[in-house]
Image 1 (cartoon, rainbow, N blue to C red):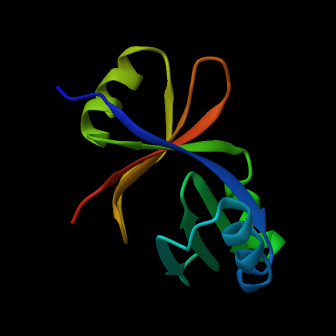
Image 2 (image 1 turned 60 degrees about the vertical axis):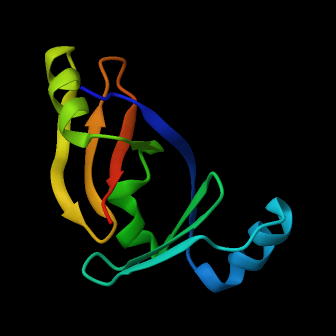
Length: 120
C-alpha cells in the first residue's frame, strides 16, 4: 500500500482562465504545466506548479468551491480504503477523469479535499 501525497495543489477559482493565466505564470516564474478543458461540467483547469486554477461561470464553479485543496496521490484506491475506514465521507468518485482517477472526500473535521492519481 503506497499512501503517499506527491503534491498539494492550492485551488484558485476564476471566471476567465485566459485573463488570469499570465498573472500566475509571472507570479510563479513558470509556464502552465497542464491544461484540461472539461466542457461536460463547464470548466477549464490549468496547473502551474502548486496552483490549480479552475475556471468557469459561477454556476459551474459552485459545486467545487467548498473543496479546499487537491492532493496528487500515488493511489486513489489506497486512500479510498483508508479514508472510509477512518471516518471520512466519499462525496464523489472514485471516477475516471482526463488525467487519471479522482475522488472528492469530506474529512471527519468537515473539510473537503480532492484526491487525484495521474495515470499516463
